[in-house]
Image 1 (tube, one colour):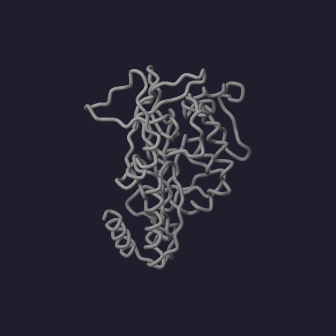
Image 2 (image 1 turned 90 degrees about the horizontal axis):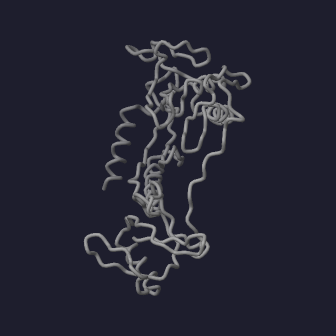
Image 3 (image 1 turned 120 degrees about the vertical axis):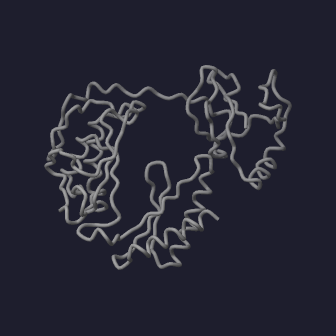
Length: 305
């Protein structure tokens, strides 16, 4: 699909192309809607790859796309069609460019602290260069969401993702203390996970802030709680779609999965985690691990059909 864009000075230019991964029925529906808008191409039109023929139309339809960046030629790179925006008028939509992040030097320092938490070193270190967010911002976020987050990770062993030099540099997983002296993050007794190093648990606000001081950007919790780590009280179905799939397909898959879980007597709900759709089902401690594995494998097979 070829795109064009209105410039703020009133001009109109070619803006590159996107992949439209539509099903045949969707493609037929879209063609039926666009056919009445057919028009001859403008002067010196772009040439399609592979000699394909193109359907030209008046610039009246607004689409939402995701893409990597604008090229020096004013075209989008690696564009993917997300949706048709019938709520927008074509002539009122102009080229969008990223806004530079605000200066952060006025509110950052080499170290800082949150009330009740540890001293945060390198607080002004930029974690996300695309937004300018710093380590101090991550600490404040952990502090702000602590009351909502803690009930979901209480007594659950954690695996954390650390980004000491920001999310565009090397990151790594960690689930043991690995020689670090931790004050608020606690370690479970080794007997709960024999033949392994003690697992980490963060049950307090102070523990969350200590994780932030360790440059933690992701917290992944086990599906079982201490002391009974052999019997999970929840399981998670990760519906991980192809990035080119329309979000409506993701919604349909989640709804179908919910129907199956309802038939199994498992109360479930949807949540988001990062950019992925996640379907989570709550279960009771009476559910044994072998049955969980059977249920999950059966659902995975049905999703692939």
